[in-house]
Amino acid sequence: QNSPFTLTSTGLDNISAAEPTERATTFREMVVQLWMRFFNRVNHDKDGDTITVYQDDSVTASTEQTVTDNTNSSNIGIS
Image (cartoon, rainbow, N blue to C red; front, side, top):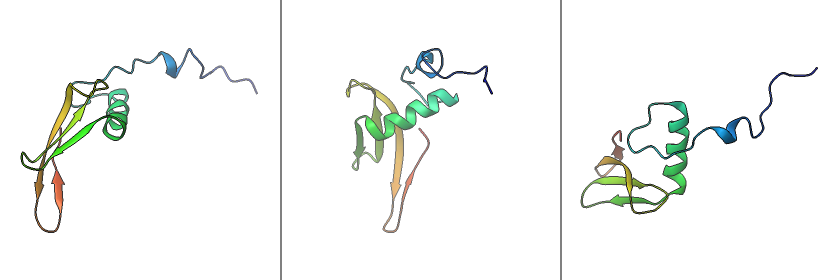
């Protein structure tokens, strides 16, 4: 059967992948932020109890999350 749908340069490659600068609100932004969390620069400031995720330039902060820690576990707040 021939499908009327294709996934080529007219598909996912044309969806904007601009980095969100605050908490993601759309599925596209959520995927980009997940990518950023694992592949961009991330700093865990143990003195300031924060995790900062940076944009591709490794200088501009994109999101920041608070971290609370006790002897048994760490809790990371929303960005």
